[in-house]
Amino acid sequence: VQLQASGGGLVQVGGSLRLSCAASAGTFSNYAVGWFRQAPGKEREFVAASRRSGGMTYYGDSVKGRFTISRDNAKNTVYLQMNSLKPEDTAIYYCAANAGNSIMSTLMIGDKYDYWGQGTQVTVSS
Image (tube, rainbow, N blue to C red; front, side, top):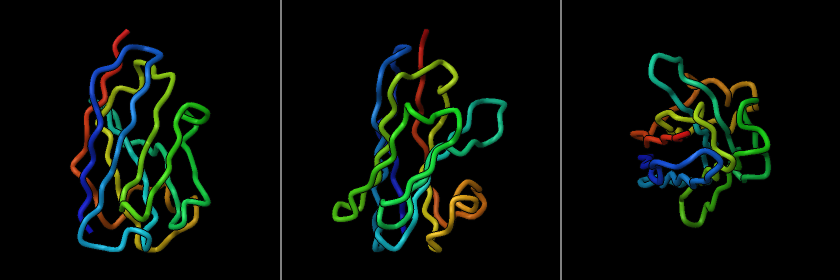
């Protein structure tokens, strides 16, 4: 499956953005999907994940209550709604697909994903 992330941009503190991750060449509903981010000089960080049906979602501690992951399997697309953005949310955001529909502890680990998108830059200005 090929993934294409989009929707990044420049936003002020407290603002919102919605990222999209569109999948092609595959049946999206067969995959769990995650969002990760990486800021300059920092390690990759787990943001959110959704299991195949979208019924179970997981979030990193730093985004809980502010970010929401959702998916539309009919459109082969996963979304990341980001609200109340902070300067520390500035990073390149990547979507990734996991073929195993794994449990939360696995979906939090980037190395457990099989496919990655190219990333989209999010910059939050103060």
